[in-house]
Image (cartoon, rainbow, N blue to C red; front, side):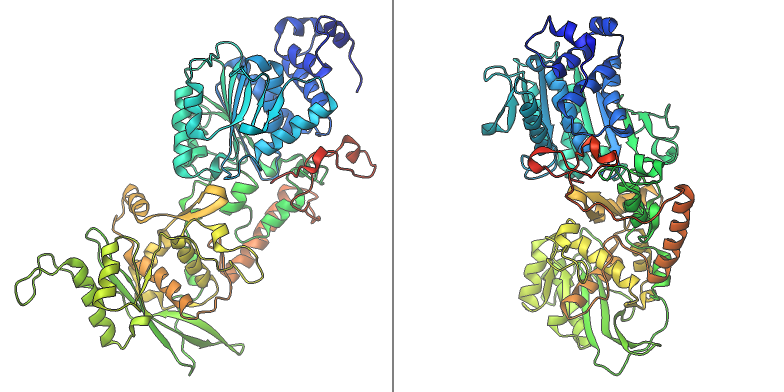
Length: 636
């Protein structure tokens, strides 16, 4: 790399500094910038090019680096990079942390947090260490060393201000609060990668901690992530100021809003996959940035580029329509033939029951089911589950007494009422299931007053190890947060595969199925609303805020059917769409994508695990080679 003339002159005054360090020094000194005639951003970029020569500069990287300088100059304390998958947010975050630290290491404190359990082995910290070691290998005189004992990069052992360190979000406030950490000179930087991946409690702690840091001089809080949900930690952090986006998220337009100020006084840059350097060029120039092939692949999925997953991982944009986050909807229920007449084959029919015991005065709902086989017009048969009659509400009366005048507890009434009803219809106790998650007393009563063969299902328990779909290695534990979510998404899948019938027997259940929502939670998993969240949502919409007991009885019945031998034809982790709808949506979205991105064509997608850092020679017509030392993989 050619050495500009001004570097030799400035290095005469700083002989111990490398060329990269001199460029960073110029980036922080207005006096030196007047002498060189270059801006702070120009110097920072030149310094980074010397520190990380394997990194390829494209428009998105330049925008991110420029945004940091903007925040420093305007004293903006919060910055968010919201971007599509494979938009290199993590790599650029690692480079920026090291760059800011090497600018003035003796006066700079950086804390890095990520949602990963093994935060020191993956994510932004692993990327930071790789880049630190790479830069040191090329520039041995760079200051600092990696201290393995506490996962930190330090300048001197006894300088508590000069450090880059992994820290959990709840501990950052305590570390910053120590009297020895005066940040009136230098900088305090909090870097949080993949904020949407944090559990809700950790995200809320982060929001609280960062508010407390606003009083700290020279603080910069930098976060990254794919947009997940308007009310999660990242959504709150990025909530638009209405002067920039009138109406906030309700006024958001994915095609026009790419940067805005937040209600918290921060700055957000959004990197839409439909605006990636590759898509804008009409060909895949950079295989490590959102590619045309990836966009095409997502467009071909159910819901296309308007589905919640595509809006998150391609467009990184808020989905403000609540209907896009319902587990199923009326169109899917109708398309899945759930309300149509059907007949059974002569095969044996399995009878079973699921009970939602209710809690805090809610109705105790008992739903009866039949499971058997239905003949197909084209020949063969399909295993189906059907509601058998309307849901039965077990009568409960407070203050009820037995023949001797002794009060009968509510749990006893529930168990005895369910037992009597099932025996009247010839349903064996081994074919009876109930939700035992709300209180331990109901589990004890079912066991003591009915029998141990009645199945208690803990909807708040861990997801099952069942595979999400035939031929997939992923299990439900990889995709959702708890068993309740498994039950709801499995029900949506059963609807999509034409295997759930006679839903018209439970009109309230159908309405509840159509309204129950899901959201993204930690580590890109999906979470179905709790009952209380559902009821609060209904209340805000001015609707009846009653417990969704009828729908919970239906999804519990689907779980019982699976335990009794139901073979599911397909599992749609996203709630999916029925086959008929999927084909229609796929065609519509492919046409829309081709119209939006001229020249878009199918290409081989870069496999996960290819190196992020590509040499400059990779794009000059020569043979592609990977230049990142130590083989650090680019994580999407």
